[in-house]
Amino acid sequence: MNDINDMLDKLHKLAADNKELCNALKATQNADDPMAAFCRIAAENGCPVDLGELLALNETLWSNMLKSTNGGATYPIEEWADAYEMFISSL
Image 1 (cartoon, rainbow, N blue to C red):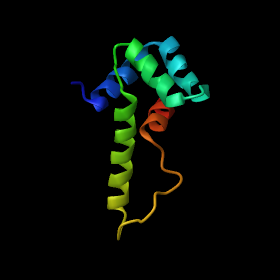
Image 2 (image 1 turned 135 degrees about the vertical axis):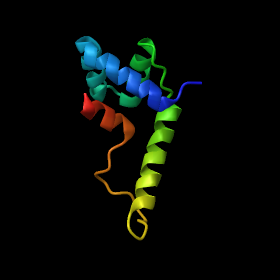
Image 3 (image 1 turned 180 degrees about the horizontal axis):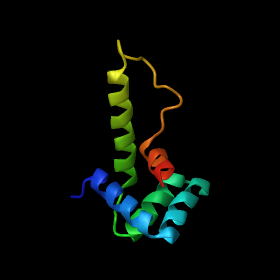
Image 4 (image 1 turned 60 degrees about the vertical axis):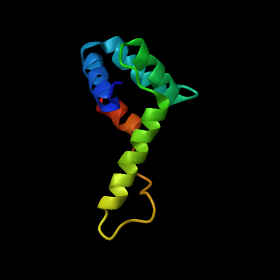
């Protein structure tokens, strides 16, 4: 089983060297289902990223941020990005 973080790192490196891939990943923002389109393109490029794993990664990121808030936050901050958004913005 591949670790999602490893797959995202590999995909990021591939996109850094391939402008067409980079543009295709960025274009997923305009898809009807951006995260599903992202996962499809990732898999097509040898970096299988399951939508469920991507959503679980988001949950882990949010949970860790909530726990790290001084005193513990009871709600997520609206501006917190998810793994997909952070990946796209890093391109």
